[in-house]
Length: 441
Image (cartoon, rainbow, N blue to C red; front, side, top):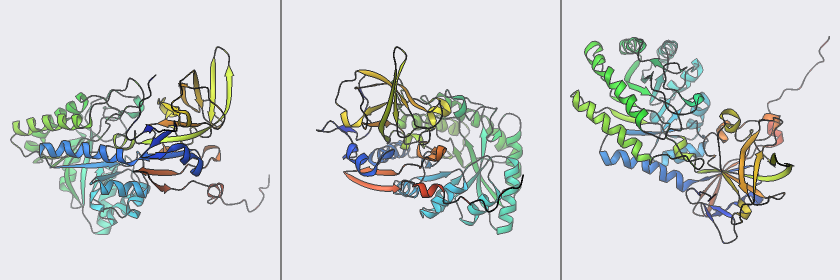
């Protein structure tokens, strides 16, 4: 198999994997493993692809970084530098954005069960909008705004009844979903009426998200068509025309051979094309178009470095190769059978001679990162690089088995910036409270 290298990745004169002009073997030696590294130039390139597609069509837009893919203060600041808005889905992500001092009027707050305290934090911070998910939340938001004497711009999240061709656990636009108001059973009409009559909500428009890791435009086009079928009804019956249509994210990336995502601009151009057609047909102004890429901005920009440890060869069955991380730093393979590619970063030019199954170190039989990976004969302390871990790696990292979470480095033009420190053992017990007395049985 010919190894596919992403972004600025290349094999240097030493036969080592290099990312952003930095030797990853040297990084592993200096910073230890597991270690997340990001190719910042590739993130910049992806952001420009989205923005250029909108600007080419001269339409109003916002590209909001879906920060659930990977969030830390430096990532929010980089997204701001790239001219992006921000999609947050929890109080923790919102708090991190506040600490990063990014413009609050560009923050959009999502989630199907926002708490009162989370909404209070959002309203006090004067964020750009809340994407309202259900009637319970409408009541809660109205109460919070009333208490604080404020008004909040909102979008209504709908389920358009469009299913993306993706894994069941990452499909969100179908009718049977925990997210949003259902478009076909009248819930959206009731939500629009209530939002329009509220003294504390300013209804901007509609939000739709059909899933993740999508390789075609048909689902997005169908979602737009479905929404515009109802816009004429809303205009005549409810006197409401959305000024914003947020079509979510879900644009796929190449994880393994056989994945064939479209150029990012193609997703955008098809959305714009169909929206312009309907806007002209209905003789209405084109709504401002918002999208929310996350994985497609940072997914293939991230690589995780591991050190090879033990091996177990079961003749005629499987050759296990264990590394010093696993489901504690990359939960996706265990969660929904995600697939990855990788190489030995310190021996990247060598011919592959064997097939290994890459096992993590967690005490779970299901802690497997890659089932069949062609590699040279692997040795103890080789450095394994697993590609495309930039989305939902660090953000889903955990302390199972009390394993500390890895650090994160940004790499660009030969420069290295530590943006998240490595957890130490003392961090794992920092919030623990010792037992103060024995329990009498």
